[in-house]
Amino acid sequence: MSIIYLMIGCAVPQPEMNAATGERINLKEITDNDTREDIPENFEKTMPESSIILNGMVVFEKKYITETISDNVSDFSYDNETFVFLKNDILYSNDKLCSSINIKNKPQGIRLSDGLILTYGSNEISVYSINDCGKIFSLKRAFSKISFFSPYIIQYNRNEFSISKVGSTKRPLTGGLKIPIENIYYFNGKVYFLLNQNRLVPLVLTENINGELVGSFTNPIPLPENSNIITSDGNYLYLGKNNYIAQYELSDISLNKKQEYKIEDTEGCQFIQSNALKCGDEIFSYSQNKFFKLGNVEKAHTTDNSILYLKKNILNAIYTDEKHFVKEILLNKPDISLCRTETRYFLNDWDGKIKEIDIYAYSSKVVSKIPEDCSYGFDFKGGYFIDNKNNIKIKVAEKVNENDNYNMYLRKIGDNYYYYFEKKDD
Image 1: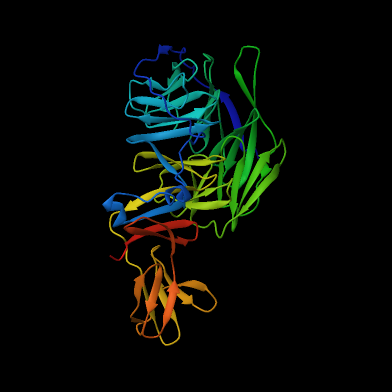
Image 2: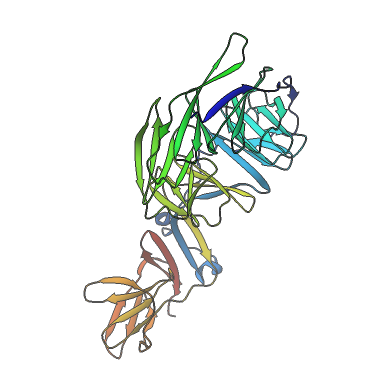
């Protein structure tokens, strides 16, 4: 029994041109991170003069750099190193020749594909061109769900769909499937309908001699059994199953696995805004093959060296290619303390962790708490914890610089540097 049918529907309105106006702003391209890094070795070469620093602590923490792009952002989209975001009634982009486009009515959402920006409201769909820096096309909203793969606008609901071409005045291609449509993707001239029976149905798009869209369905492509999460970024199809995410290329008749990423469990995970895999409060980076804890993210997109994410209407970018040192000045030096039981030593360290110290093997391990019978009786001076009564000295920091009045000490914990100062005895 056939599961599909095609028919021709109503006409698309004439394209509408509208020159862009409004203030131009230059946004730094998201893939060009020029953040200047603080180097701890340079800091320790010169003794600071500020009493605020000398009575506090200077921390160099190595971490992934996060930058805020804009606040009050309602939506964003990314495609081929170009990104756009919607703020109030203005579309902003990182394109230097078209950094902003004014729009008349604030839409519900936006989609970017090959230099074209689709915006949609409850009644209308509009398309803006970054090259023309203005509106080039519009049509009426037909169905509740929208996919945009330039130049094709695909609207659909549970069983019906409508495909229009940007710039065309011809009637859209409309039709339907008897099995409910879960999602729609597009690769290399074919529209792929994801059905709730875990299979893809390809539709080959062509144009007849009148310039109208014509569709021809081919044989369904089965998906791996029990794939529980599926998405596409327009280049690859991503399937989640049990403890892995697989990246596939689509051919005419099958799926070709390109790469596989192992994760602990895909249960409770979901794809948000294109290719971003969200598991709890973490977003997965394919290039780094690891998760980044970013909190309650609403939308995200991963690139080779960054993750764009929207959180509480603030658009941020975290650069995932490498960590950089970030300097922080603490006005009040945090406490550090050492205690001992009959056989063990426990350090409450500056990184907020509790460590059990083996003073003979010069090693430590992180523990959850300090024992109740742990007694404190150590003085902390000159980088050492000292127990004169029992003739014990435990070194935790090293002197790296000095002047007439102060010594500078360094404690290195992992990749992070903690500098503090002690006033010399008179």
